Length: 107
Image (tube, rainbow, N blue to C red; front, top):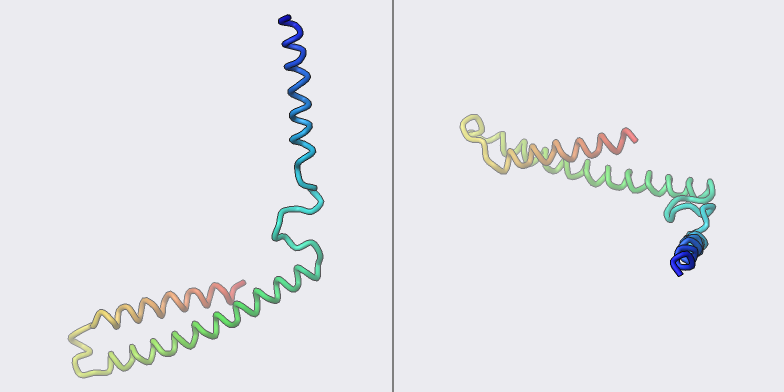
């Protein structure tokens, strides 16, 4: 009785593993989201380049607006004595946007 149980256990393990093996996806397809042909890859790269260009233009326009407002804040009579918190925040935002633009241009 014990031998029959052991034999059945050894036979059941490969059958269960076999079922799991046959349910795996086809490895030729690859993971989802990965381009399958060169034309798909080119389209994806050109879409990324267009998106980067659009974001760079928007960020540069914002940098220009922030720089002009910062220059107006610093040109007042009390500019040497008092630094406003908004001026510091504008300078930090300019730095962040410039770093983002630089990173996208390096790609």
